[in-house]
Length: 133
Image (cartoon, rainbow, N blue to C red; front, side, top):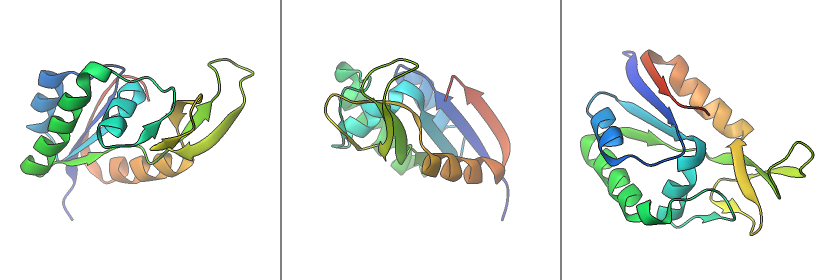
């Protein structure tokens, strides 16, 4: 199996041209960070009180379709660490990324996502990383 090119984007904002340009240069595109929930909601998932750019839902859906059309493997988190509030002492739990309870917010990738992303990254020859995850 040949090594692939992967781009990891862990940013809070969905950038149309930025992500489209990345799709031209990679085999795998990992989306994480705050923009995750805009993509998950665009796919019909329940994101609770997680960060979401409501005005970018249609754009996120279009980018998902463009990735499919270009043969780019678009990877989104499958689970996350969710909390009732943002704070050091907040109660947390692991939830499916598309099933965050109302009043809770997704704050970080979960253990299954770490395994998934780690495997794809380890199999890649070239890695470009932009933003926190």
